[in-house]
Image 1 (cartoon, rainbow, N blue to C red):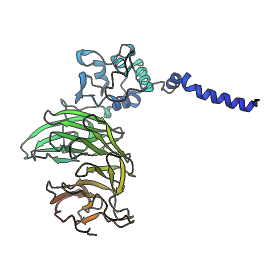
Image 2: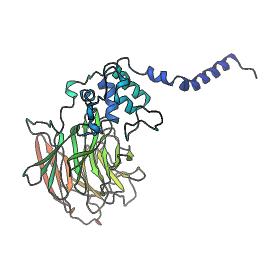
Image 3: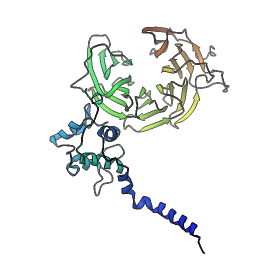
Image 4: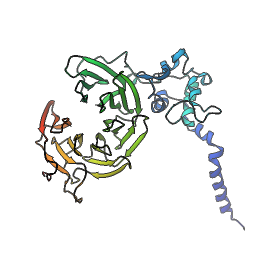
Length: 423
């Protein structure tokens, strides 16, 4: 067979392409590394995603704190430095994150995915260049358990939650959640973590743990799980690159759901941090989540003016619970709560109207029918920020505000679930 010059060139190019990943992988990785490594731009995101969940002031395993360069140089237990500037070969961190002969995986991160070759090269080169901390002053971690925030004025309260027994009240503050005695007789503890902004704080069904959704705006989302019997951080789970919203416990306390500004809904196993649900059917930020009575479905609401139903086990988007008629809902939906007995949801948002919907459709879908609606209630002033059923489901409370003035309403919600919707 005779090949033309053109076909020979094509065959040669194909061969080069096929062999290139095998022969030049190390060079390709090295070629993508910046000449000058920035801790804040290049290294911090790696540590944030894979290390800081276990190595931070609130949860410093082996006394290693990887949220501050000075602490890394100072060292952990025994005073051994985690990093030695200019000397990666003497830096204990490099040993921990590098695959050693005879091992199946690096020692660290213990449970997360190991550092990629590119990430390891970044960290190594940063140490070679002196391990310089270029974190902007206003982005440095300033608060921990021993140095809690000091308030000159009252903070904006983004979340409140009573413990199931009514004995404790969780109040979201700046960089912390404050646990008060519910009768107002005193402060129990201050839970100071990495998140600057706290968007939601929710007690577990047994009242022994607290789930916190928040983060560092524009940098990191975080879900925290606190043990309230010992007031210690059980888990810090970095999620996405912006603040997390709407943390919610499953009825059995085994899972936590939350939403992100990248339009996705997630849930994970509390025992090991592994994700069990990912849903991307929203078209705008997700601001709150809630579970069905038996925990097999999640409902999420957000700025796209919808409440969406997702099946947990299959991770399948099931239905738009609220009307999809243009203009039927004015603006985004900020708050959701599940009825304690029935698979009904209470929602509130920009139009200031509390509404109760069925989770599961009982009629054939028709565009504009809004058939899942059970009842609308009298409008409140401005935008509803939070709404919640009483433990018996017979009443609910909603909170709204407009132009610096707030309103709290208590509504009767005791209705016959078999009635046809009030449209």
